[in-house]
Figure 1 (cartoon, one colour):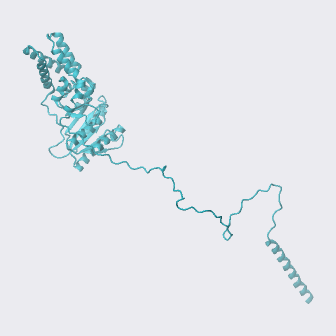
Figure 2 (cartoon, helix red, strand yellow):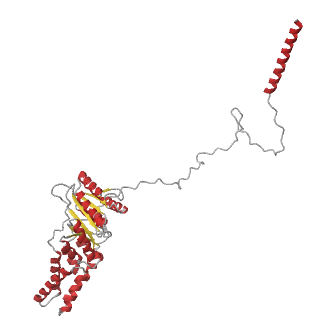
Figure 3 (cartoon, one colour):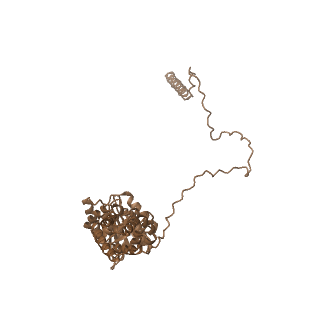
Length: 398
């Protein structure tokens, strides 16, 4: 029995020893696989690890501070500076401005005055001569009825004078033209309401007459006379119109109210008047979109702008801008605008570029309102208050 137990113990010991050998063999590092037939690829050198000894540093000559080159900054990009605010301009006084521009006006208008004086100086004024005088006046866009009135009066005066010296003829023609133009008409641009500030001026007209530019120049006229101005860019149909008007305003320190492109013009006009009241400005100038007088819907919208503005305060001026070079076509435009809004004054632009100065007489007769301002060039201060005496003197020359 003891022998059997001894054999079992020996067997257990042998089995345990064999198991330890197997486990130990598994824990040993496996040998590398045998080299294959593929070509050997050289591995990159291993990166040094912490604890590895570094290579002995190489000795290099050290440079002194004088030998060190500073980086070249000549080609460096300069930091862009913000543009400075535009410098406020001081426009020239408006008093006598038309007199100062007389030479520019007379260059284009002398054909009318000199032509009439030449015809009136003939020794015998027969019917053919009077017809030439009438034709000269009609060509200058004086209009049919004013022309007939002027010719009749000239006939009567010439009969009374008998002999006619150049001085007498010039004085006669000057007096008759002044009578037709109306020297007693009130040509003041009304910007001082009796009740409270600001004065409200709306500028209307057809596309291409220079309406937005005229509004900007009118702001300069008012600033030159000591007024503070707010501009309303109610021409929302032209993207450049608001930018153009704002540029004019910035030159003289006028604030511009504008709205989104293709927005409601009446809303912009309303906000401009509101802003002018809050700022205590003297005048609000509202630039409207240039409407074609044949477009009924657009003309109705112009009437809407007028009604909306009048919810704040009554309009002091509604100025119609006409291109003097369009002649009788300008009268057609004037009639339609007068039916939609109550025109109180006329601005004639490009008067220096036409020999048809008689349009001043014709449009006043047509609308019964005075020409208050005239444009005589493209310069910023070429908009002048209309002075009948200076205008007639430019017509007939020296």
